[in-house]
Image 1 (cartoon, rainbow over the protein chains, first blue to last red):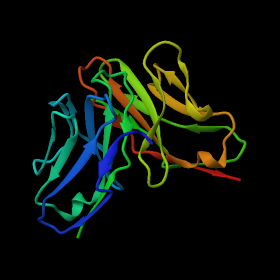
Image 2 (cartoon, rainbow over the protein chains, first blue to last red; image 1 turned 120 degrees about the horizontal axis):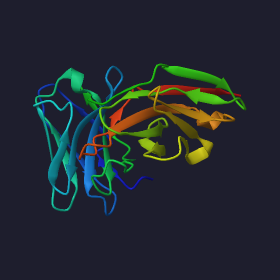
Image 3 (cartoon, rainbow over the protein chains, first blue to last red; image 1 turned 135 degrees about the horizontal axis):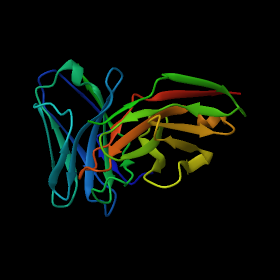
Image 4 (cartoon, rainbow over the protein chains, first blue to last red; image 1 turned 45 degrees about the vertical axis):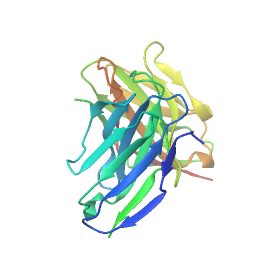
Length: 114
Length: 115
């Protein structure tokens, strides 16, 4: 168990809908990262937050947004969902924002858009 | 920009034989390199990292990786494969000169170890 908790584990929804994925980092970790894993794109970095502030941005669509709250949990909001958004979404955390730190990954949220 | 290439989609090896999973990288600053493993229906687990120092890095479960700056490679190795090593392996790179923790992953290599 990595200590990173993601809910829900599975999510089935329809095109055009909006969903929220939640992540609780390991106790004491200040950085949260979101990744999208799909068969055709592989593991894509979406966004990083450190202590409530956005730290780095990757290939995140404008329909997607994220935030990190004062208690350090994070939410990834996906709106106007399309079939192509179906993927496994991972959250990861690390102690700080330093580049030599390893990430601890949650078990992911499997999103299916029908 | 950072990028990672894992040239093999799948590597097959017999149990007891040595294994190598290949990785090459591109980064403008200092490369910080990582290997992660993903078992079915699980999140990624950290195996090992190279930040600086010895080119041969030892990690979890008997794995090691060799950093080669001239070839921009960071191949994962194990002297004797186990069936339980069968999983999806990811190489990842960070730009050590940047001020973010942005970690870029390769496409992944499936390792199949047969009894």
